[in-house]
Image (cartoon, rainbow, N blue to C red; front, side):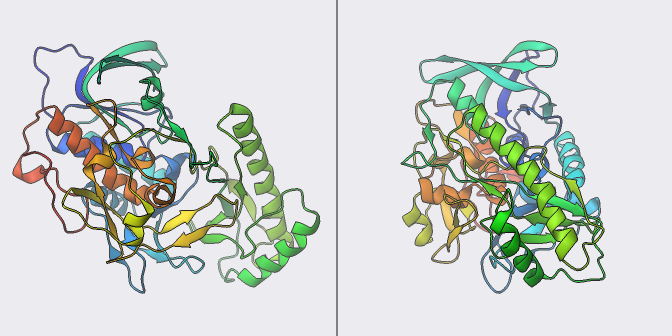
Length: 427
């Protein structure tokens, strides 16, 4: 980490808001480029949806196909290496219902791995803190006010990365944000759960799950739209079942809507495990091990970027000289709860994400990572996943460091966060 000489302790080169995959990628990318970095996270742990929403799979690391072909590399590989050191093999798993390649996760390992890797890169982390306000001069952010456990504090930065997922930094900075798609509809939220107590000597019988929920849907309080038994796999190192079976449509971004979603998701989780217990062989002693901590939010606000990745970019697998990351996950539209619609990426199986997708329109020193990057509604349904978020985060972090005029070095040049291609930002 480059020391900030003759500056107050509250001054950093790059300030990253949000500690999910995008925020971690941004913090690591900026730190590798030599910047002093502060990462601010509202929870008491890092990891984003993987640790806060029970989404126990990294999606987007691999392209679709008969064999897993890697699309994402860079700092994301450092995270996977740290997870392997904690006992996860991080081998890709092909979902039998979607035919996509995912990396199964265990959330406690993710929390510790991210703590360790950020510490090893001298990234300053503030947990239980969030951005409450921003100070700007014309088209430049000057500082943010953090609401923390010890009150409010003002932190000055040269460049900023919004990796909050909900565009909270862009919002408090006064940028106009689109909600949902062009018609205001939001991708449905999801409530994946962990189920313990399964007899692992008995294979999971998908047909029995399908039959049980066909009967449950006739009069159950929380009928599921997933009529195929849902998406499930085994949680690494535990033997628990990870199961995505519940989806909840969101009318808007009000606290009332989210309260209803959270409460319904928890009630449905208990009901669904009871269905397993009473109807599916091997689940006679099953119990609900974990929900949340919060429902999985697929979509909220979209801040203005200098370029929006388009559906056409993805369907054609468009590659471009200004690409800084790759989108390889299919367009996965959840506008209708429980009825995802998939469209595969064209061309070579991935599309380049250009630099202007991670640059804010209206603020010259604000960058985006993860779910906040520029994308139209269809492209968003691809780029929102965590594997892609690591890559866009790394690109945003290195671009932010370049804005600060932090010298690049041969070891950590701000290259495209993919398995092969380099595209330098510091010239």
